[in-house]
Image 1 (cartoon, rainbow, N blue to C red):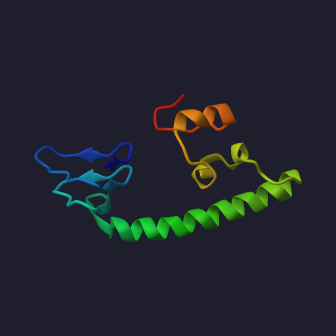
Image 2: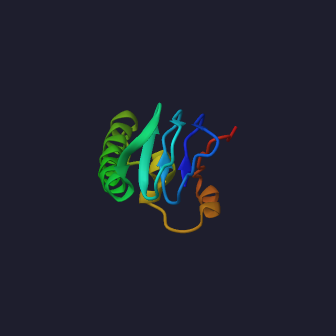
Length: 111
């Protein structure tokens, strides 16, 4: 379950499993499992699997364009540490091991 920052969930609302609620949403009624919801008031936007497939394609495209811009700006191919939030495309393993490779992940609340 992922609940975006500054989301308001009213009392007596049931939040199910395996879902994403967008940042700043106001949840006034129950949200079912396996969906993406958001807005004010929050409503179901997509089935989670459909959203995942769509985001995966966007993610690859965004990484490609980020790498192109990096090459144009620096004149060199990007290394994993240069790809920022796209590190999952390059790395399989434990997140703790990323720091030793010069990659630092960000989470809400990080300073």
